[in-house]
Image (tube, rainbow, N blue to C red; front, side):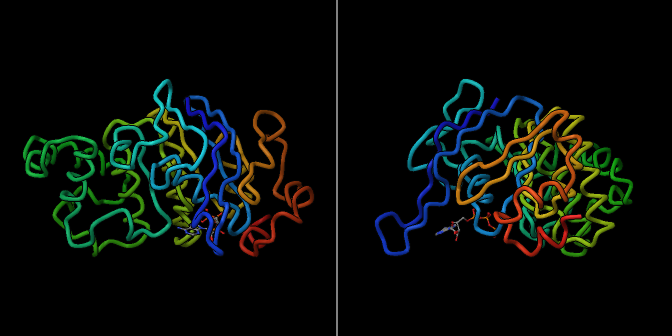
Length: 262
Ligand SMILES: Nc1ncnc2c1ncn2[C@@H]1O[C@H](COP(=O)(O)OP(=O)(O)OP(=O)(O)O)[C@@H](O)[C@H]1O
């Protein structure tokens, strides 16, 4: 379970540019929940994921994963708990390394063993079997440079890499928004499958209201650094993107959300 208790994140405190990005976020996420996160530009969605990942430390409040208080732990100290896939397919992988080398790096996340260990110890077979599940033929291209893959292929591999080592929490930060609709749908289905199979707790930021309601088990809306809506269960199941627009149109001053609302 993830517990966020009164989380505040303020950038440039005291300066003229001070920005209160999160203002008292309280949330309890049960193990296995898949929470989709929506909100207009600047609502605090990425900061919210950054706080869970440890990339920004809250100026106030606490974050616990199960009984462990991780509030003050930087990203690398949470690597055995949290993994993330970013919007930019180039961000999660190393272009100049091969698929196998990238996966070897992912395998040693949060561990002390070196890259050569991860490449030596029968891991090629593991990489082969893992990639085969994608059905993209990448299992036969283990020695291909990552830079030669398409955006969708890279994002699919990024997802596999993020979930290769044991973890509890998967953070997806608009991870399909740079892909064409068909590839985005493929990566989204793959995400849902991996989350279910590995029984992960997941949070996904999306600018698509349809995606936010179609995938996952719970949806929260952020506005000016606060959670203004939190829905799950039957209420969420009967909700449409149009309902959200009708109810929160004024808080959703985001063209991308409005355009993709249907
Ligand atoms: N490192 C930073 N330094 C200063 N201000 C920041 C920083 N990161 C974010 N902010 C500000 O905090 C607010 C929340 O930003 P955040 O990126 O979390 O919003 P968001 O909901 O993810 O927006 P978008 O949908 O546009 O990506 C914004 O006003 C942003 O400009």
